[in-house]
Amino acid sequence: MSGEDTPELPACAVIGAGVLGVCVALRLAEAGVAVTLLEQDRPGHGATRSSLAWLNANDKLPRAYHDLNYTGMRRWTELSAGLGGPVWYRPAGNIEWAASPAEQAQLIARVHRLTGYGYPAHLIGAAEVAELEPALKLPSLVDEAAWFPGEGYLNTGPLVSDLVALAVQRGATLLTGEQGRVVSLEVAGNRVRAVRTAAGHAIPVEVVVCCAGRWVPELVEMSGAACPVPLVPWATPGAVAPDGAVAAYSANPGALTLA
Image (cartoon, rainbow, N blue to C red):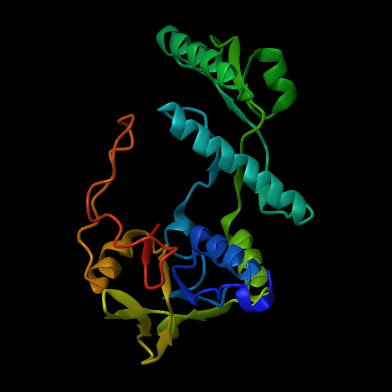
């Protein structure tokens, strides 16, 4: 394909510089998209700052939700390896035990279900628990625990800092504070044409990806889409997203994509 035949990538704004927003901005920048990352505070200081950031697919039902989480775990492992094993990735594993016979039966059943999925999960004795974590003292009546070696957690502060720096190196523009606080979306012909910030700047865009956590409904309302944002009943297999959840697909210039 010649250069003349290559479609021009749309200019994109990503609203919200939590872990989701910075990952989206980084991948867009790596793909050659002109992306502006907008954050009303400091990167990683919204919902991401309060997150446990536990990497697991341990008790995630239905199966499709488990598979989604397990895929995410593997992607974090790949990203960490590609960056040389940064300190924010902590694949520490997870030990879990039950406080009653009934809970122990449930834990054993969960381990068997997860191993059937191909997920790393084992039942281990108290001696092996002590080897894995000498500082942990199990209750005297507990002689068996579950060990999930593939799980871990993220240290979100340095994680977000590293990914923001990488996104900027790849060509993304970061705006924070009043310069990054979105106050309106300029819409024409049912398409987003620009993002306006509290600093009075209008940033021309063709696609907006909203990763703003609890502020999503307010931002969606600015676009003229349905508000409040309807939620998908995730626990119901085969559930269909309600009408109005997404104004348009992100592949279409002018779209507002929710995240």
